[in-house]
Image 1 (cartoon, rainbow, N blue to C red):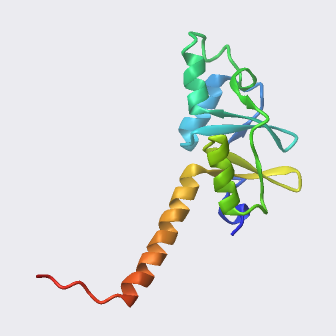
Image 2 (cartoon, helix red, strand yellow):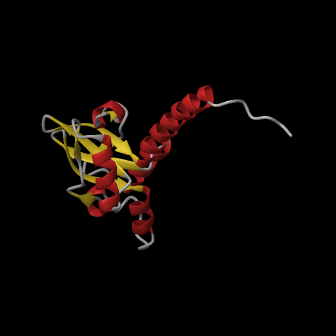
Length: 143
């Protein structure tokens, strides 16, 4: 299974430019119910802003209108290729300690994979496996 098989497509990810105010980022995250915004230019991810990044910036006492995505974003975010394997992606996410990964195809941003997406995938697969076990096992007897 490849990353492209499980990623949320570009139409579903939330993105903005570096000049977007932090207040606008907060509104985007709230409206779209996401924990990050991919910062992009020319269809390439140049950064990522997470809800934690915003919380840390707000802790500095600045106004949300004074700061922009460019001020607080994680520059040059870790990305993965659409054709990479899911297991390889999981290992890289653990190695780098990241929860959200923009997906690149043909040099352009095409989607995003989050830890939540991987947990849902794992739950689906565990359900399928348990159904196989259940169908092959004798029923439990009550004492």
